[in-house]
Image 1: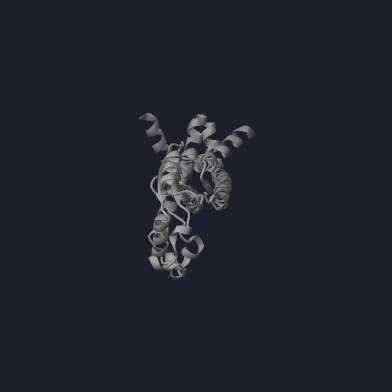
Image 2: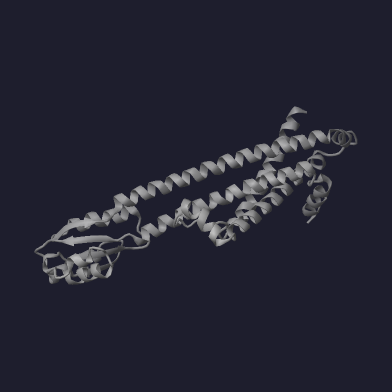
Amino acid sequence: MSLVWQFYHACKQSRPFTRMGILASVTLGICTLLLGFTLALLSGSHLVETRLRDATRIAVYLSEETDGALANIIARKVQALEHVSSVTHVAPEKALEQFKRMGSPMADLVDGVDPTWMPHTLDVSPQASATWEDIQHIANEIQKISGVEMVDTGLPDHMHIIASIHAARMTGFIITSIVFGATALLMAIIMRLTMLSRTKELQILRMIGASRFYITMPFIAAGCVWGFSGSCLGIILLWLFRHIDTHIAHQWIGPLWGDFPFDILAQGHAPILIALGVSIGFLGSASVLRMRENQT
């Protein structure tokens, strides 16, 4: 409780909302805004990868000699494989009917087609916990089963999407690191200017025997207050951006992101942004104080 009271007293002494303090808070607000977009990008990319993996199906095309009875036997063998959730036997008649229901422009071309020339197929659903390596392993094991003509996982196309997702994540991490470091450096410069403006006051405090903790605590408190107020400002900007007019959102964001789940200020992001803002303010002020101590 005494530490909280000392911090409160240090905040009053620091006079954080001077011109320099307001500049620092606004800068941290802009930093929080950028970090909020980066968090949305990272969480959205993870959600895309999860949805893509959950939607992955393995199409198993059986040989022409395989009839319905043999297809059911093969389906049971596939069901027994590890990481397989379900297996659905799709007869040629059913496959043709499903194709017509899809509303494809080519649906009229298959009218009157004898479905007996079409092979039996299996629709295999991997378990939700299955990784991409597990899905490929399932496909390899299915290919070894007698009566299987071809296995299609769609993984080559998926891997291109996953590579783009990983590139987006790496870009997000790089942007976060650059923004974090640049803002901390800017906070250090502002704190340095603030200390220079109070040089006489600091000299008097040292002359009367004030402890190092008593002298440095107000500046640490100012940095934390800047970080907290700036992050709150950034969160307010993110909230406003999230609730802007729907027409504007579709007009400007839609062409850029399409169906990407770009959830700005998702659940749990606000505490992370506040913690990052306070950390930037603390590190910026602490680094200057440490450098000044070494010089003296």
